[in-house]
Image 1 (cartoon, rainbow, N blue to C red):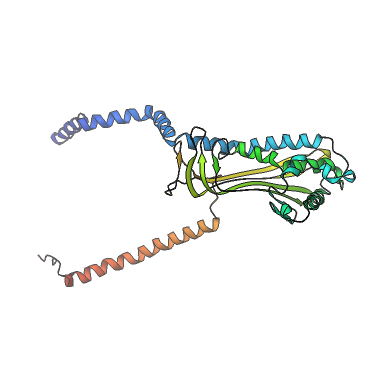
Image 2 (cartoon, rainbow, N blue to C red):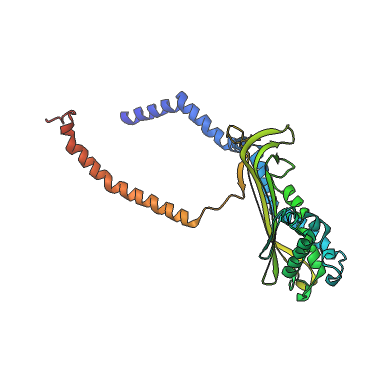
Length: 324
């Protein structure tokens, strides 16, 4: 009984100790402080990370809605018959952008500036229009061979019209980060696959040496800085109506100071890829196998090392084991 009374007395004293009181106060605060801590962690992440997440979740659906509105508007426009003049059918903006960007129509490449360097730029434009027509053949309404409305809609998306929408829906768009001093390359692709048209658009700015933010002057950066934006989607015409589906959009950027430090804006390092690149399943499997082998090796080697340690200890001049 005296032993139990002493234990109760010790527990009572321990509970009344300053350390115990501090632990009780900390425990009481945990429940009410959880939302506050979550809010604090959210703030510490920075506005840049939150803004990137907002763009990443809204980029593809917003761009798809914008491009769908453009292609439906162009499809409803009056277009002359193909036999009356193929160049008249194409969208005017596409004809302006020809030779200012890289076009891949089917398997034929029309490189930027190649037509201007050639002997006949007009012949190159006509060849470009013929290739675009060939890719669109059979993809129009009711499987028609030549659908001028489809050709006009496709050529509208293969222009700066879609590129402007891509820039506004990307986190790294010119509305936030304007890069200069490097080489800019714009690409468009149109390919027919099983009665549907697969299109791709992209912009690459490499080797940039200057950039600016909305609230800053022009700043110098290292030439390893770049900005890349791209999107892919599918066009088809079921029952006489054009449809744009399966859009995916990606962007990546890296801004580096002249001393090769990554630029940080609003708490976010501007060395990003959105959405993040998926890790290869094969690499994950190899990593797991390697980790398992290392663990097995450690289990086999450790007993041997311990035995070796006891065997060589007398020869190392260390303290001899005490014999009683």
